View (cartoon, rainbow, N blue to C red):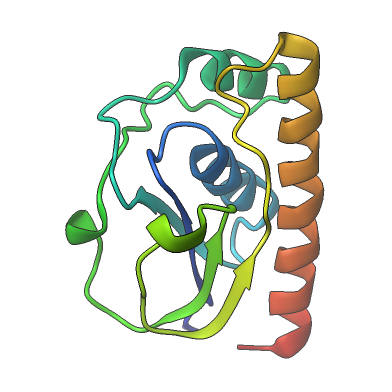
Length: 136
């Protein structure tokens, strides 16, 4: 059985952006990538608005939980994607790194939160396609 490329999505609290990215990666990358998310300073809970708005897209995040880097498998990741947390994002060993510079939707209106959600989905779909093409 072929090993799937590993993807880690990191933001500060692991409550909105990285959680949505993990959810979309598990949906759009099922059987193509293995996805995780974490935070440099996890909040301990997943944002309720993120859970509700992901449900609109058919992605169930009700069992997701906010977690820190110390709770992840100790490995070199294929891709580490930071969400725009700047200096607050720690170094994580990986083959490839990207910073998507996505604004934190935590205090946004539902309309603007959906825009961020849809941006995350588009970027995740692109990443999955690139990972498959690279044949990692």
